[in-house]
Length: 170
Ligand code: ADP
Image (cartoon, rainbow, N blue to C red; front, side, top):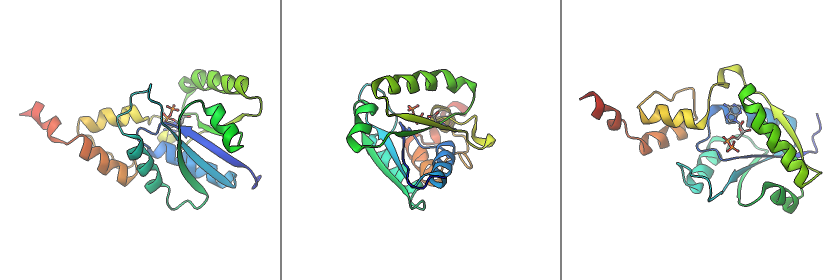
């Protein structure tokens, strides 16, 4: 264990799930500090605003002392240079994640040779979880317990009120 390394976990977290949280918790035990970098990318359509995403990540990680949450816009490679930190954390759920992550890793390395990406695998009970799947299920009124932190479940309920589902069953 190298306690001196400061690692960055970038992502859109739209919204944060228990899968992301599992990766954050694992990373926080391996590195001295984890910076969760929430993307503020205008080209990507998000269901939650940047502020909502930041607040939910902050609230869900408040018990992890060495975890800090920030937002960034633009190229990740430039942001890493700006903060002088070159270790990235990414999560791998299944082989389907591999191709995209592989391309992204090599692109980041091409942009900046100092960047190293470390992949962590979540507990197997979270390998099927994705933010988009969570939103689909929440929109249809599905139970979120065990899938997302409590504050995220509350926000999903506020955003996608259950009566949307009931209208179809009337
Ligand atoms: P991005 O838009 O950058 O892919 P995400 O918020 O979707 O952002 O994901 C950020 C990182 O977390 C990615 O490396 C993704 O593979 C990983 N991740 C997403 N869901 C899970 C999960 N259930 N378990 C483990 N890793 C996950």
